[in-house]
Image (cartoon, rainbow, N blue to C red; front, side, top):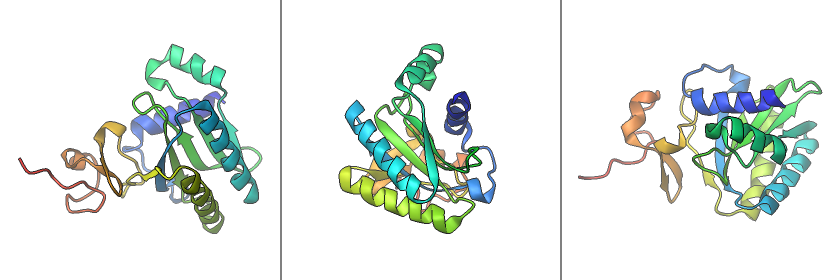
Length: 187
């Protein structure tokens, strides 16, 4: 399970840098407000059910492990850290699920394209239909052309979801006119 924590931290910190294989490329991402332990438990139950439908399985860090990690590395504090895997040996990650020290309780669900695109799409669509029905405050996160997601501090919340703060467009392969970028505010 430590590899799950390490992998998640590396994605959080370096997602905008590392090239990804097509099957690992992030194609959709959402922020789900899971502010209580009961919400997180219910959410993981829903994820587990939808994963099983596609022959996938969920791996999630225990609360004790999350606490140990945050005590050792305060910047790695999370209330939820999980992944949905394809294969009995965790051969391919279909989704990563985590919050972070700068957005505790606002859990990001990031979906990979998947090796079996049709299966990955069915899983994503069914899961998010249920999640949005249960947590209608769920917001979309912008996925940059590289497949990365900007850091939380680089996002602006809009009525239609998050957008990249235009101050950071040079950090990503995106044009200022892109729908992924928030409009510049007039001075």
